[in-house]
Length: 173
Image (cartoon, rainbow, N blue to C red; front, top):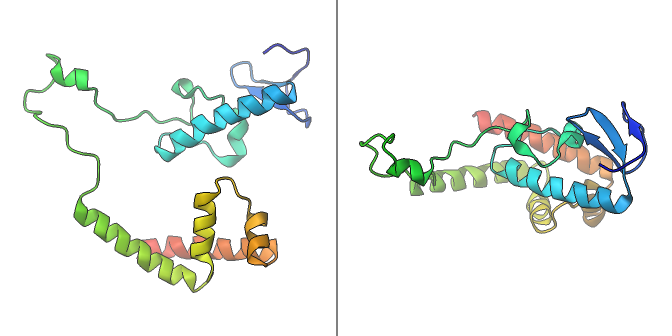
């Protein structure tokens, strides 16, 4: 990074990027900061959706988009197709089992989801609308959802906390 200022603790200044290799902070131009954070966020979200990234919200600054040496990244359990044709491959492997769930599993999951939504809707009647908003408008804030529902943000946050706790309890059943 091409900068003059180096900070060893977070400087509480805007547009600071953490270098996890040098273990220090650099202040950069706003345009570079936004570009860098967008790139890192895109990669991090893709890896989190795939179940390979376990970076928590309070450690987002740690993400630099290079997952290979990240302590929060879990290696994928994919089998290379080249391996199947190599001499090292077990001759008993004739086909790769599909990682997709069976039809029965999909039906069970759908029924469980409907049951969970029905129970959780008792706490938050607008839950389906909230889910749709989150799905359609990635990155929408709780404040914006509360505004659209016409309720205070604190009320919305409290309801979502109760919904999450109840969802965990229902999943245990």
